[in-house]
Length: 250
Image (cartoon, rainbow, N blue to C red):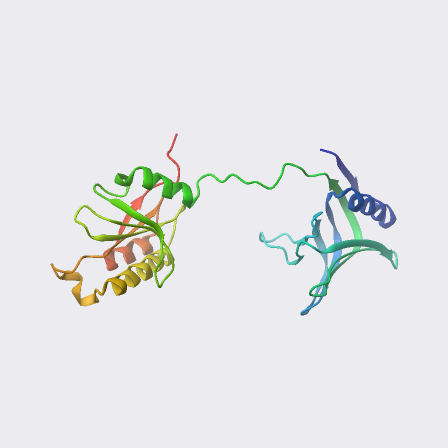
């Protein structure tokens, strides 16, 4: 991989590097003291500060500060990058035409500029995903509980698709909600909505839960771990938690 990196370039030197990088189709990062403005469907201005500008060859532009993982300003792929020196300062613009939007970054000083030819494709192989967790359960249903039998995945309901629908050893309907990491009470609320939707579909009233004739619609949350509040809400609703990692431990 070819990398061009210059420290403390003059504005004119930075312009030359940017023009060459745009011509080659490189990924560019520019770190320096700058102001940022946006004009389009709305308008915004960001005062002077040290920030990182990332320009991708697909037209995406990202302005990052020292906080968070999201950019404070950005332009989507399909924009066009242009650079110029105006009034003694480096100006970088990223513009897209539909809708008409322009992101302008004006540098008082450029601390570092890097240009890189990034290759390797966009295919991403994820490990430890909810899909991995679902695969584990489909291959070994007893990990949920002895006698559990998966029947459907992504089963439609009025509350959305259920991760896994099945029946327990006694024939009771079971809704299984999968989470690949530690979760809180929101996950319990999501599971409750699926269980409620299934009860409505089956015509089971809340008062029928203790009836011997009506099937008990159960909810099971499968996640590596849960918070104390989540555990309390599971207990209140009569749901269960199964501690399971997306992939088996080596």
